[in-house]
Length: 226
Ligand SMILES: C[S@@+](CC[C@H](N)C(=O)[O-])C[C@H]1O[C@@H](n2cnc3c(N)ncnc32)[C@H](O)[C@@H]1O
Image 1 (cartoon, rainbow, N blue to C red):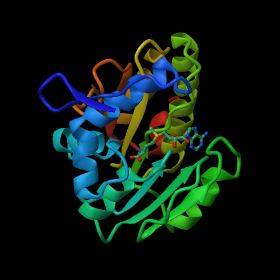
Image 2: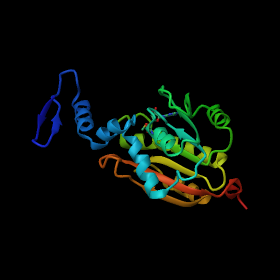
Image 3: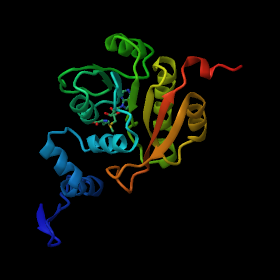
Image 4: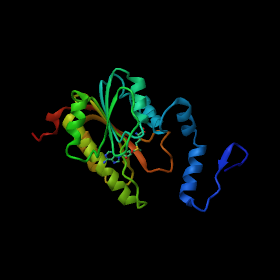
């Protein structure tokens, strides 16, 4: 590793054992102000700032009492929730193991498992009023495939939200631009009073990641045909 570029920019030499792609990733991590800030402020991931910035814009954390965090690992979003809402109940799920977070119940489990929704609601002790999904499928490098796989996750998260949220509740989900998301947005608009797309400043410009924020859940009856 060497300091180059004159403005404190850290350059990483490509080791034979390291691919050019992972060298680029490492270089970006080392120079990313959000990574530095996360370290200084005790957040496990720079993703914490995406949630913070989304909340600054939309205010969905205010007054939330029961929160579900889908794709919780390593835990940045739940840390933000716990710091903002120390009395709220928080339940999270991830395929990956997550170090404990004080006040949160965490399942290492596939959210797509049929048993997952009941496990989450049972642990929460009641209907959620906020469901967060930062779930992303492992990318395979083919943009359409990656977008579709992550869309499948956010669709399942939205379905869970529509079946479990308290009236007035909110849903925040990660989507990939280029995915087939018009049906998803239509479904959201049927069920929530406001639906917005946003790309918070902490979301890397080069990434196709966006977030949808749906607020004011209309309740179960809203989804039934007349
Ligand atoms: C971008 S990370 C989440 C970062 C997190 N919001 C934070 O602040 O630390 C996406 C997570 O989604 C998880 N994930 C992907 N598919 C999943 C599934 N089917 N069930 C549960 N978690 C899943 C991944 O394992 C990964 O940890």
